[in-house]
Image (cartoon, rainbow, N blue to C red; front, side, top):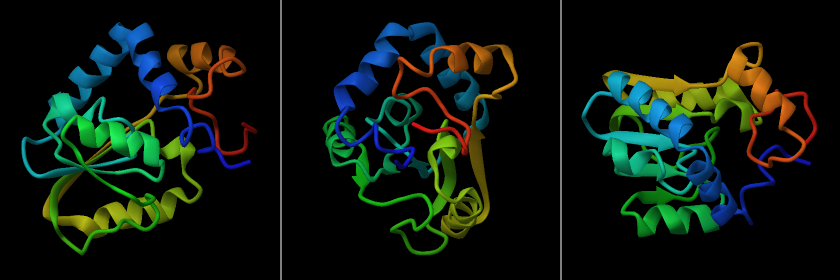
Amino acid sequence: MPRTMAFPWNAERYDAWFERHPFACQSELEAVASLLPTSDALEVGVGTGRFAVPLGVRSGVKPAAAMRAVARERGVDAADGVAEALPYPDAVFDAGLMVTTLCFLDDVAAALREAWRVLRPGGRMVVGFVDSGGVLGRHYGASRAEDLFTPRPPSAPV
């Protein structure tokens, strides 16, 4: 089963995770905000727009229709697509963002090539991930069985 199978039918449950973990959400937002330039940016794996909206990111891509719909309701121009084949022409964004996205991708190298392709010269890509060996990664690993949205290593079953 693909690692992304939790997303198409669980937009409300995904958003509820952020409601249950407000400090984790806020700390991630602050960390990303310190690195993301205030410019025309794309969030790859935009989800429901939880990060895009407070960061001022106006464009996003997500294969899960229910999540795209919520992101659109929040004002994000959310396109249907996957990280490995972004539905944008070359060099259209000043910045890109992937927050806890790499662990859900089928081909990380292809996704990073695509991110580079859609960035304008001098653009910046901010990638956030949870180190599976760190304190937070070990904590998430312990809750993996109960939580559909806990990041999983590429070889872990869903």
